[in-house]
Amino acid sequence: MTDDIIVLDGAPDTGPRLKHYARAADAEYWAERWRRTPEPSYEPERAGRLPRPLRRVFRRWVPPGSRVLEAGCGLGRFTVAARALGYRAEGLDWAKETIERLRSRFPEIPWHVGDVRHLDFADGAFDAVYSPGVCEHFEEGPAAILAETRRVLRPGGVALISTPCFNRLLRARARRLFPPRRPCGDFYQYAFTPEGMSALLRRQGFDVLLARPYDVVDTLVRFLRWPIPAPAIRPLAVLDDIPVIRGWGRCCLWVARRRGTA
Image (cartoon, rainbow, N blue to C red; front, side, top):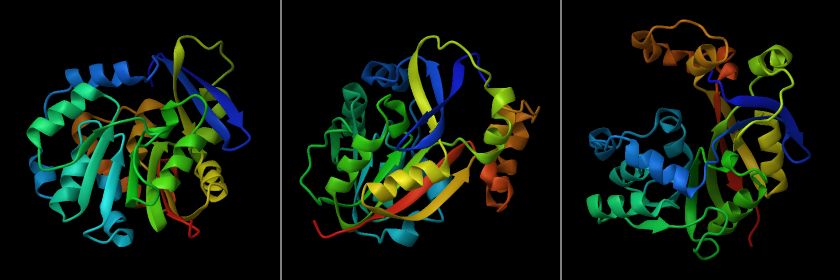
C-alpha cells in the first residue's frame, strides 16, 4: 500500500466504499501516464489474448462479430485483442495524444477521443461496452457513466465493468487498515463493494450476470504487506480461481445485461 490517503466512505447509491486521495485522474494525468509507459509490443493482443479477468467470461456473453466499445481504452490492448478475435472493436479515451498514437499504429481500428459521461454515439449503437477501471475515478460517482453506457447499448447488450473492490477481507479489517484521517491531495478513485455496484447497476436498468472479484495477490501485497517475491506473483494468480479466496480480490468485474426495449 502506498502513502496515499485512503478513507472509509459511503454513498446512498453504492453503499460502503473506499475513497482514495492522491492526484486527480483527469485527462492530463492519463495523457502523462500513457506517455511515460513503454510502448507495448501488442504481440499477445494481435494473437487475441484478452486481459486475464475477461478470458473466461467475455466470449461467453458476447458473440464474435459484435460491435464492442472499450470506453476508456488507454493503450488499447483490449480493443486490439478483441479485434483479433473477430469483434468489431472500437476504442475511446479522453487522452487525445494516446488516441493519435493508436490511430497511427492501428489505422484499421476506429479510435475516438471522448468523455465516457457524454459519448458521441447513437442510442443502442453497441452490442457490448467494456469499462476497464474507469468509472471509479469520478468523484460524483459512477451513476452518470453507467447511464450513458446503458444508452449506447442495444437492448440485451452487455456491459463489462471493472473497478477496484472494497472486498470482504478489507471490510473485515477496515478499522485497522483505514483509520480516520484528514484527506490530503486530490480525489483519485473509489473502491466499491460487489453488492453496492450490483445494486446500482440494477437500478440503472441492468440485470447483473456476474460480480467476480479478482487480483487476490495484489490485496495481499498492498494492504496486508505479505512479502511475496516478484517471481511468485504471476503463478499465484491461480488464487483468483479458488471460490472462497477470490472474494479477497483487489478489483471486481461485473457483467450486466441491459434490460428494456428503449
